[in-house]
Image (cartoon, rainbow, N blue to C red; front, side, top):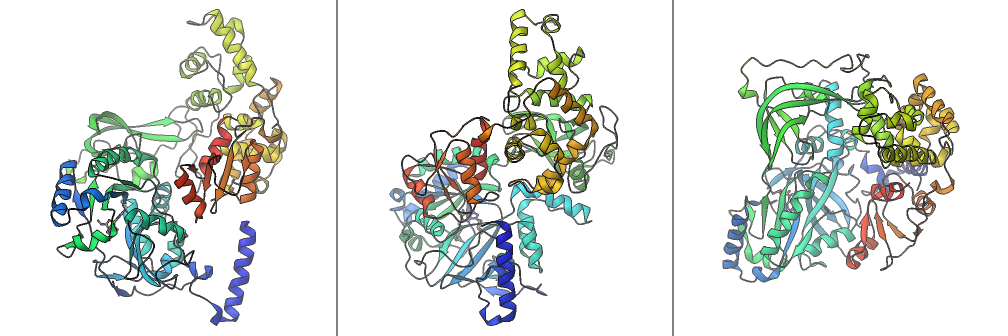
Length: 639
Ligand code: IVH
């Protein structure tokens, strides 16, 4: 359903409910946002206590756990284990009566929590009404609400701007957002939910924990990725070692893996330790990879879009087996929000990030000699006045001819996904800049064979090859060129969407913000950046020169390449930005096919929100599953 259609029907429903309040049902979509702020949260006594978990900090402790529980119930050793990420969020319990969400509560002290039903209703992952019919009439579903990492920095920036304390971590952000008195604030936060446990006295279709997860999916929940079943604890140890490196790719924080006795019939026999921790599960914690070291200096690097990236020069320190001497500080607002000072002892981590990052200062270790860092108002490379767009965290050098930007811009322009000019990598570009032969991307097309041959390290053959590669790049389609230009927020996917919609550079350059924003998958922020880019006289001049050199300014039908030729896709659930029809169009445009049922011939199942049974079938058959972003990557990767 298109957004506009959804909005129209939603309003119609609101009107009906206003006129006939008795028709308003608990699982109405209007109830996701409708409730009035409550003055204080109502206490709720859990029917069954919400337990916590014992920890194992290394493999030996994990093995000791199995030895302990095997003394009570020997069958555990052969019954297998279910492995799931331990999500670092806020524990909640959802009561469903006859398949309809009735009460949602926080964990509280495990015995008494707080009712947060209106807030939980704003989370789209939580079904207001369960799918299917085979659910217990009365049950509690327990799981974790988390704050997506992709939104965390933006939330803290907003808070700092509003004069509020930033959240220390995503877990606090999740817990804080849940306890809002006004559900519309919770809704804006974009919380997500993963269930992992069903508490009921009625029988239901799961005999093992790994089946509980499948059943939850069939009811319309989305369970945390990468869960799996192993036959023995030895297998669990191997699997956990493979799960830990996945952390950087996840949009949630996980601080370990929960190992659960798979057979549910053994759980009651194993019982609970000290009324607090079930014996049938244990959290194998990951070692936090954090080190403390001195921050000597804060330097600023200028990226190809002009973004100014502050980074810390550190006293070298080992973090997770790697020596780290620089680490990103992400952006100036964060430096200020976390009050990171030059000379501070800082915490540095690599967990969750490939690039090391500074977490924050160790305030106790301050000597008074530390100096505050001042956000520059001039570009450190060219001296242009810095720009700070209203709703962005980043600060930018607006000068397209800034030498700091230029180097990165040319390297990006020539790179594989962009204009694909082989032989024009970082070293060559630096050499061409230092000899003043290339000062912007259009200069690439003014290079001559003779000029190249005169350069150090350029054999005749290398020069010929580079000239040929430059010539060949002129036939790259508009989508590649748009991506290559390095327009802020325009990645390969957006470039392809824009090229497909507008067809030619001329049409796109004349488009208004509204027209650009009307492109599926392109929001107002991107549209603004695109129109702003083409509005700059320097950029218009650059594009004119590229046109004179004969670059392709149009997009061939279907985007030229057919990267999905011979591939078959099945779509299940609601995709975050694309409508079904649009996804189908894009797949077919790239030479692929869309079918309605999963078979061995299916290349991949594209999984959206609230996926149906097709997802289970894909898993059973071992067919690849990808999300919308994955699909778009496949479509654009060879464009
Ligand atoms: S099972 C009765 N599985 O960790 C259920 N807990 O330290 C016992 N948690 O409060 C917990 N991810 O909210 C389980 N995959 C997972 C989990 C998980 C996060 C939380 C849970 C609990 C806390 C215990």
